[in-house]
Every structure is written in C-alpha cells, then in structure tokens.
Amino acid sequence: MEEFSLRTILAVFEEIFGRGLFWAMVAAAAVVTAAWIYVLIRDRSMSMRKYLIAQISMPFGAVAAVAFVLWITNSSLRDLGGAIDWIVMLGVAAMGAIGLSILVYVVQSLGRGHQPRA
Image (cartoon, rainbow, N blue to C red; front, side, top):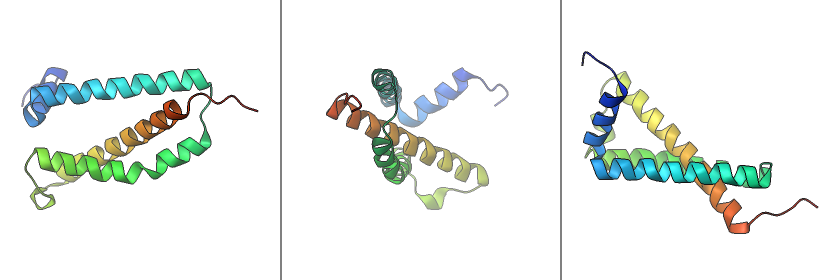
C-alpha cells in the first residue's frame, strides 16, 4: 500500500464488513451521536447518576465489539498475530465501550425525559 488516504480506509472497512453493514453502522453512530448532543443541549448538564450507569456498561460494549468483529471476520483470538493486531483489537474494544456508554446515557435521558433541577 503506497498511498494511505481516507478512500483507502473506507475501502478496507467496506471490504471487511460489507458495504451495506458498514454504512449502516456509520449511520447508527451518527444518529446516536446526534441524540447525545441533543440530550446534552436539552438538559444543559450531565447527570452523574446516568453517567455512572453508562460507565458500568462499558466493559459489555468492549466485549461485544470485539466479539462482533471476530464474528464478522470469521476469526478468533488465536488468529491475532503481531502487535498491530492487538492494538487494533484494543481500539475496537475502546470504541465499543465508548459507543455503548453513550448509547446507554442517551437511552436513559430520552426514556426518563428532562427532569428540571429542584
């Protein structure tokens, strides 16, 4: 690979996940991010109780993201060879943890609605 560009990265991800699934995941991430921004603007602050519950969900998100990538690529942890493979899996785990944390916070906030301070 002589040239490293955004097009190359997109092509690699489309090849790994398939074009439809990849863009569906991008759309889902965009919707959750927009909902999170909406909740933060609407509430004008973060609820520490909701934030704590969201943080508790992070390990589940990390494990689910790694399991999903291993399932999609038809691989196992034994197939991870070099250091870059482990670094990529740690990145996948981090993104899964952060993503589920944001999703849990948004679901809590939208489910309970805005509760003004007393």
